[in-house]
Every structure is written in structure tokens, then in C-alpha cells.
Amino acid sequence: MRTIRYILQKEFIQIFRDKSLLPIIILIPIIELLILSYTATFEIKKVRLIVVDQDHSTESRHLIDRFSGSSFYRYLGQKASYDKAKEAVAKGDADQFIVIEPHFEKKLLNEKKGEIQITTDAINGSAAGLMAAYAISIINNFNKAILIKKLPLHFSGMPIQISSSFWYNPELNYITYMVPGILVLLITIIALFLSSMNIVKEKELGTIEQLNVTPIRKFEFIAGKLIPFWIIAMVDLIIGLLVARFWFGIIIFGNPLLLLFVASVYLVLVLAIGLFISTLTKTMQQSMFISWFVLVIFILMSGLFTPVESMPLWAQQLNMVNPLAYFIKINRMIMLKGATFYDFHKDFFILTGYAVAMLIFSTLKYKKTS
Image 1 (tube, rainbow, N blue to C red):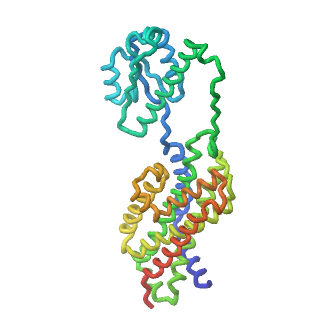
Image 2: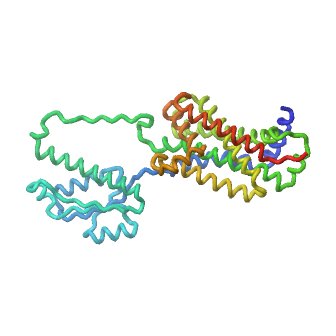
Image 3: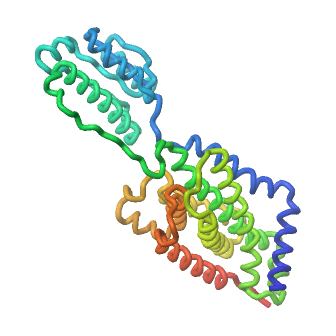
């Protein structure tokens, strides 16, 4: 333990010697958490809408009012023809337009049907699906109102009353969903990059030979390199949890100590992966490239932005070695659902086994000469 303590002293002296490093390590993740939580969203709001009203009747105006009064839409006004509305979408000035056919109201009254055309910019497929669903929902409600108005006897009975209950995120706030995931992402970036550049930095400075000729054992060297950045990453996590609580108003429904315990194991795993990368590389540039390559795969397959269940089966199986996917899932379960250890114990034991394996690989890969 005395040897590890001396290595820790050396590492902390190096960290605090660089006056600009510590503020970057602490402040940058918090700033990124504040920015990304507001901007990294798949919510579709303020859809730019144009209407081509070829009927100009009372019912067509009622329908337009339903769209213009919706919080999901930003009504841009009317165009005289289909071609002009199409041109606006092609230029990127609008996201969607609706064409109300001539004699719309007359057909509703006499033929009991009317024609409406919805055209949506579908470059972004998922966004287009949501925009189309918004429009169809509004039209369905409009249609229901007409039926009740025109056929009051048919709807004079007791209608079905729908009452919705949303668990874990009752206000359907996307920030509540994103903050736990982004917080995991940021501490992962900090831990992986710092640890991956640690040993290789000693190689570039030429101090690794001085350490190799000392009687320090391999596990003591790895522990001394891992613990300082583990502490820094845990401090980042605690600050991030405080920001989530007092800035975003996200209450941790689960046990905070359980969350910190799981995070401590997870960070050991991430730091071990970084140290393993550091033992493989000879320069900091190589280490940065490999770390970034690994991180991009972990992030895009983690379920942070897209559901894991939507991925191909082979990708879901490959995701079993993605630590980010495990901890994002666990963090959301604890923070938002109030999950207990039993609810995610299998994922935790996988992370623990993964961490032990990576520590062993890192220790074995580090070549020490005496």
C-alpha cells in the first residue's frame, strides 16, 4: 500500500502541476451536460407548415385553425397552389404542407367524405413519421368532431373516456430521458481519454524507463495509474448528479449510494480499457485515435440516441461488449424508475466480470523490466 500511495502522490502532483488541466476536467463536462441536454433531442416541435386551401369554406378554416393552434406546428400561412407549396418544401423553407381539395365542405355535407392531402419532407425518415402522425392525429380529431356535430343521436350514448398515465416521466420531458444518458457519456469520455493517454505519456516523456527499473510491481503500477482518474471521474459524476437535481429538476428516485456503487465499478472498467489502449500504443496521437474509434462505436450503439431494440440482431449481440450500453440502462433505471439492485443485478455482474478481465489484460500487457 505504501508503494501505491507514493505512485498516487506522483500522479496527483502531475495533475495539479498543470493549472489548466483540472478546470478543464471538471468544468468542461458540466458545460457540455448543460448544452447537450437541451440540444440532443429527437423531439419534433414547431414543424413549419403551409396550407393550400382550395375550398375557402367554414370547415376548411376550422381545420386550419386546429393546425395553427397546435404547439407542434409553426403555421407559415397559405400558398396559392400545390406547386408553390412543393417549391417551398424543396427549398427547405417548410417541412410539411396540406392541400384541402375544392368543394371540401360540400362533399362533407352531401357525400359524407372530404379529401385532404398531406405532403411531408421525408429526408429525415423518423422525423417525417412523427410529423405525419401529428397531422393525421389532428385530422382524426377534426373528423371525430364533425361526426359528433352532424350525428348527435349516434353519439348520444356514453362515449369511451380515455385517461392516460405516463410512468417515470409523467411530463414526457425529453430532457429527463437524456440527462442520465449524457451524464454517463461525459464521465466515460473523461475516464477513457485520460487513462488511455497516461502510460503512453510516460513513454513519450521517457520517464517510463525510470519507473520500470524501480521495484514497483505491475499491479501497484496499474493501481497507481487508475485510482487518481477514478477519483476525478467520480467527482465529475457527483457534480453532474447535483446539476441534474438542482438545474434540471430531475429527482433520483433510486438509492444514490447504489448509483455511486455501480458507477465506481463501471469507471474501473472504462479506466482499465483506457490503460489497455495505453499499453498498446507508443504515442499519444495513436492513443487518441484508438480511443476515439472505440468511443464512437460505444456511443452510437449504446442506446443513448437510438433504441438498441431497433438495431439488427447481430448488432444487438455485438452490443454485449459495450459497457456504455449497460451503465446507461442502469443509470436510467436507478434515477428515473427507482430500481433496486435485484432489477439489474445480471447487468451489474457482467460489468464486474468485464472490469476484472480488462484489469487483468492491462496488467499482463504492461511490460515491465527490472
